Image (cartoon, rainbow, N blue to C red):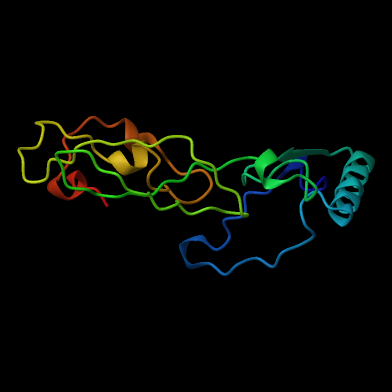
Length: 162
């Protein structure tokens, strides 16, 4: 890297290697484990010896304390599930638990809103609503998000919830 004029590197734990049909990259040592720390220290020493800079950018939602940190103490991922009910009237129902990763889930809110299927739609529905409300993933680590700022009418297909 030094010979090619690079000043260093950023280590990013974003993974995402399996997105868009790619094969999964084989796993290395668990983030924060003794072996991972040993390899990280080695990379820092080599970088210092060569006058390079190493930065660490954690993006995957992993708890930065390593495997000793319990899931409830680590970074969280907002998740949800949907249930459609018929009204009007009081409805008592147990809601299904949304998908959970690493064995941890906690309720933070229940939102209810009318869908009004079959009624006239507003003159200007919100375009790309699922992406703007984080109900749908954009994909990849750093997608171009400029289209989310466009203020144009949605087409019929983007009006219906998924």
